Length: 515
Ligand SMILES: Cc1ncc(COP(=O)(O)O)c(C=O)c1O
Image (cartoon, rainbow, N blue to C red; front, side):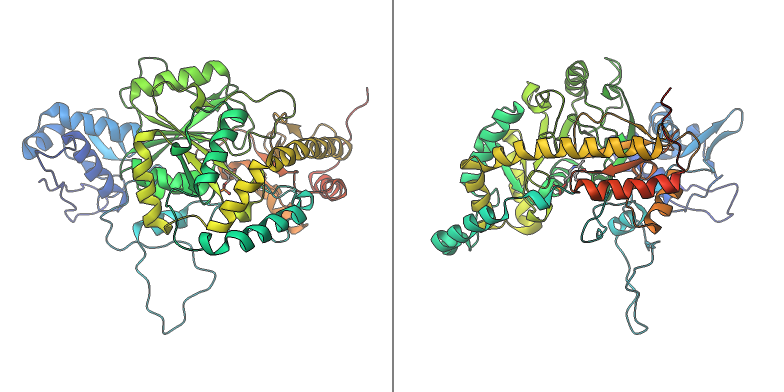
């Protein structure tokens, strides 16, 4: 154990580096984690001097190479900086510490005030590190959305076009015929007929390779992510996320104590390191290949193979979130990554939130067979099992061909709504909004002119009753150009046009030149 004293910022000695020889955790990793934790908790202050490698090596009884390995990892993460001829210092500008290893924090402070507010007599809570992390994240999943939904809220399917009468009939029949049998405790992995129906559906529609026994029914994609984190991620593990990307995935992995590493995307999808560069590979990579959330980029076939090969070399898991692949307007969707995976390292996540309705809270995970039991145990601990009657109704809905029919109808409807959105944007704003790829999905990314602050625009639009999501709020690192996410699938043409009219008024109208 070594006492680390800052030369600057505080004169008090700070922390100890607990180091245990003979554990499974490599020495460099223990040193790296301890120093990071001391920095994040503030016990090693910004600007503080980190003892030299020789001293640390002697005190800890390890080689200088081991210490160097730990320090170079911390340098790569931005926690420390090396100054020529002076040594190593804690960075004055720390990286986003919400992604740092959170455990062993003594008294976590939750930065965001609760909207409810404590009563004077209430005991002040000592929040867990997990909750403290979540409070700092821009979490879509933790926020209640305005009801009823209004343009351009994202993630909303056309609830006005759902076959409610048919659903009600199936629900009523199931309740009458098997309500008793389906109302008790059931399998943690889900209702078998539904698992069978899903396996057949994803094989036919998405080119997945799976047996019903690999299907784990979840409460939406969100629980799929949570179960993956519970089963595969330990605090301190590196998890790569697309940046910009899905905040609800970031929340799950950050709260699990993972070191979330943002990875950029280009026109072909997530940037995969060159072959051979696998030394600091992550434990897991989360991707949205069918339609990158939120930019709309479809991962190219070449990039899919490159990612699979790289993950195999790096021995990393891939989580494929295939949340809205059904809605592709221009061409047939590429088959899913899971279907191309020869080495059983892809966990496929699907959801009925887009194809049916989000309040149903049913989704699925297709896992390599060796992980299914552990995922079931994790599900059992989290919330036991999925709801019985709803699963059976959904299985009936799929087996009778209603899902395929509904998806076909919605594909045509969403394409029309997308066209309405693009036409209204051209009328109201000319070329002031530049759209990303709109060949698929339920939302469009509209790039703002360079230099326009997307959060500010979004705030002004909200005050005018128009919901947009600023692209920068989905990004971990600063972005070069702002944009707005415009959800269109859930709204009739008149509502889309009216909202675009207000958006035009706020952004300033400049009709497209007809020259
Ligand atoms: C990237 C992504 N994954 C998954 C989902 C669906 O989540 P859930 O199934 O938990 O409703 C969404 C919804 O907006 C999403 O954008």
